[in-house]
Image 1 (spheres, rainbow, N blue to C red):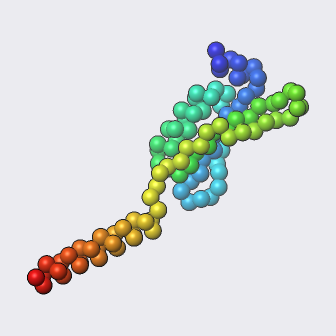
Image 2 (image 1 turned 60 degrees about the vertical axis):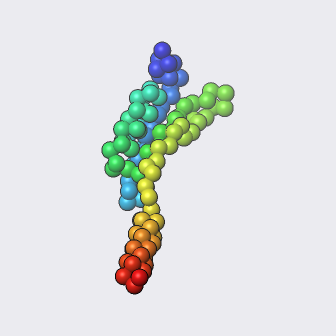
Length: 106
C-alpha cells in the first residue's frame, strides 16, 4: 500500500551512480517505489562497476509550494587505498629481509 501512497503524492526516487574513474554522477533512472529503488541501488553497487550509488528522493511540498530533494541513502564500496597496500607490502618485505639477515648471521 505504501507504493500507492508514494504514487499519489508524486514521490520520485532517482538513482545516481559514481564510476571508479570519478567522472561525476550518472542518473540510472527514476522509480516511484522506494523498495525498488533501494534494491536496484544495492544491485548496482554489487556489480562492482561503481564506487558509490545514491538514491535521492524528490517530492512536491504543497505548503511551501516547492520541490524538496533529499538524499535518501548512500551506498559506498569499502575499497582499500592503493598507498596503504603498498605501505603494508613494503613493511612486510623489510621485516622478511631483516629476519632472513639475522637468521643467516647467527
